[in-house]
Length: 199
Picture 1 (cartoon, rainbow, N blue to C red):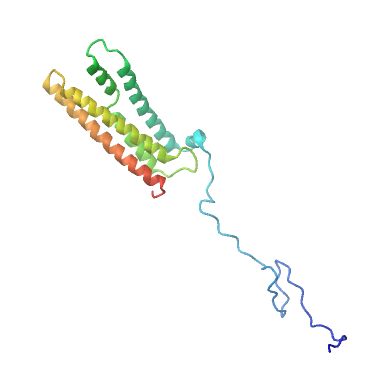
Picture 2: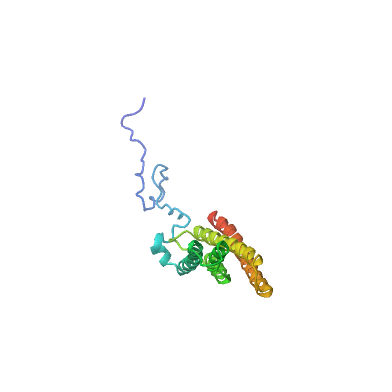
C-alpha cells in the first residue's frame, strides 16, 4: 500500500517562454521553445508589389519608352490601311497597294528592334504592363511590316518605269522585309521564354 503521508516527488513548473529553465531542473518537453527562428521569407516577398496598369508602366522608364515606340509603329501601319481605303485618282488597285505600304520603312523596323532591346535588356519592373505582351505586340507589328514589304516588292517588280529606279526600290523593300521578319521571329521567341520565366 502507498503511504498517504509520503509526499510526491518535486516537479518543477514549466519554464516561461523567453527564459531559461532553472539550473539543474530537467527540461519539460511539453513546454514551448524559448526561441523559435523566424520563418524564411517567401521568394519575392522583399520586393515591392508595385502598381499595375498605366501607373506601373509610368514608373518604369524602359517599359514606357518601349510602349511609345510600339505605338508609333502601330500608328504607321494603321495609316497605311487608311491610305489603302482612300480612292486614288489614278493607278487603281496598284496605287492602293502602294499607299498601303508607303507609310512604313526601315525606320519603323528599327523602332521595333529598339523596343525589343529595351524590354529584354532592362530588369523587369514589379508592376506595369506584362513584358511578354509587349514583345508579342512587337512581333505582330514586325510580321505585318514584313507582309507589307512582300506586297510592295511584288508591286514594284511588276510596275513599268525606269528599271534602275524600280530595282533600287525593290532591293530596299526586300531589305526592310528581311529586317522585319528577323525582328518578328526574335521577339516572338523571346516573349514565350519570358512568359515561362526562363529569361
